Amino acid sequence: MEAVNQLSTVEEWNAVHKLSEQKPVFVFKHSTRCPVSADAYDQYMSYLNKEPNAGVEYCLVLVVESRPVSNAIAETLSVKHESPQAILIKNGEAVWHTSHWRITKESLKENVK
Image (cartoon, rainbow, N blue to C red):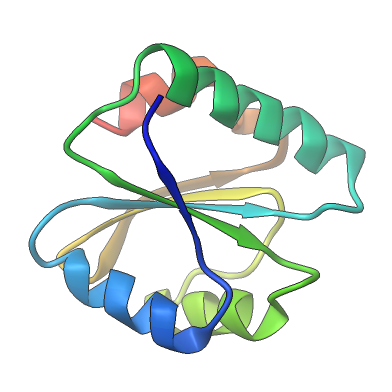
């Protein structure tokens, strides 16, 4: 399984955003209060446990607990906040994102190449 970097400060987000200039960064925004998000989180973990792209930095944001980080991501990338939400970032820009029931192990495998 690939390691997941939990982002809990805006400074951590800024560092990961900068890192996206060197390697792709995948951010999963998860609400710990939402059953749809729990299902998407299970899909994310299944992807990470089976066939992740080892060349990607994987990050997790708990949107309730780390609201400022979630807001900073939405603002920096100009991607409207949703949760659950999956965002792939390359060179500082969101190149793919999806949310809710569209977050599946298969969609992650296909798009996080």
